[in-house]
Length: 311
Image (cartoon, rainbow, N blue to C red; front, side, top):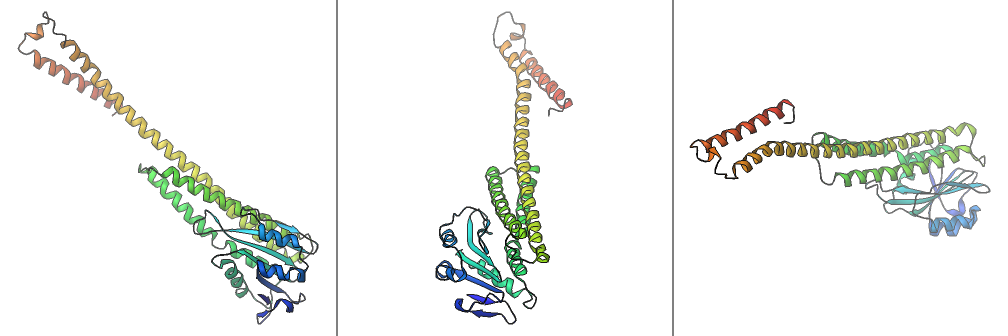
């Protein structure tokens, strides 16, 4: 599917593409194989689209008279796997998107939204590319805000001493999501900077600011993602500190209990020897005397520990 970017927007066939008019294309891999020779694209780029890795590696290569690259998108719902992959060709008056993997048609929809949200009478190749790239990240600040809220919720639980058993697993999952996001942004920054360099002189000098604007925006997203990664580390450390604090309190309690019962154990052991010469054995108040001594010792230790703020 190809569109001539003019008012009104006109859909045309592949054989009707006229590169004297700004043209936008959305094709599948099969359609690319049938038409790449028409536009003078290298067969190597077609093979890269067909066999590209699922890892984030996005970069734009410079060929004789066009740019080519493959961009890997994210599953924005779960942020734990790659969802969209597409190739981009940029030539004089041509912006071509090759759908490699797009299960929910999100890339196609974003591209069509871009066309419908720009002024077709004033659009340029640079504005068209910028509009599409911007659509790739227009919801990412909201995504980062939601991740920040999740991290903050766990921090509040830790501060309230409401520790979840699986908090380490949760924090680790959030860090992995943020790492994946940051890698995704690094990919987009590299693409924006490559376009801004304008190695083939395809773009007007006064229009390069759009690519700089895109790179700066993605850089802010990348910085936010790294900041949240550090936040995760802080929350994890706070969790371990709280665990250590609780453990110290338990050990302190055990120490106090042991200190109180140690002299009582000594008294019990002493009077349990049953020597015949022990006067308390025949004294009618001996049993009560030992009870009073035990209580006095226990109360004395409790008062001492409270003064020392051990209790």
